[in-house]
Length: 322
Image (cartoon, rainbow, N blue to C red):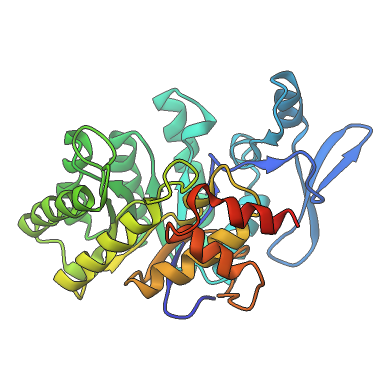
């Protein structure tokens, strides 16, 4: 658990992948299995043979293991995954089935199964519906409410279809992640993030969503594509914290390290810096990021890269490669 940070555990999101070289995989004569511990602590296995064959066919390096577990309706695995996130400090569980299929009807069947499977082991954690399909989010909100559970939406923005979800969120008294995307796409800088979030705040004000139920996401973008992406985030976070002391600030912090080596070091440093600039929540895998490891020799290099002082991350990369 990371002190002072609420955690949206991302490990039941079907977009997540597992490297084919992972030591969690067991190769047998019959195929490929993922080894894990169930909620009773017993050793168990998720069959990833089909996912491995699909990855091999496209010459891919990663397995779509979350999507495969959902397709197989492996309740033992799904409950163990949710319980593991909560045990590591997750306050909310992100549920996303989009990558399982492109068919809306099938997506709904996947989401319905996943919500009903995870709810009994979720304890006090809210269930977050995460989808590119606004109608699927509406259905998910209704289902979670019918089970007597607290819901969260991940996420809304200024795009018309996403902004229209505000009424549903207010009706179900759900928590909401509201990100800084504009009506026509991602913000280019801190000022655009601030302007977009301010406009979205006004929409939520009108709907009567309490400030402490809002999780504003200034958007974490990779520093590999722009060395200033970290600073854009930090500036926007400071501005929103100053304007709205009671609101939550959240970010998908692992996005910052896409395309770079030793991602866990950068992700850990980003957690530290985001909190420093006003963040109080994060979308992460809490099993991988458990605390601020500021004594890591690479930490200083990671901070310099995240703050834009190491252009193209050359010094960080050189240090990590020894």
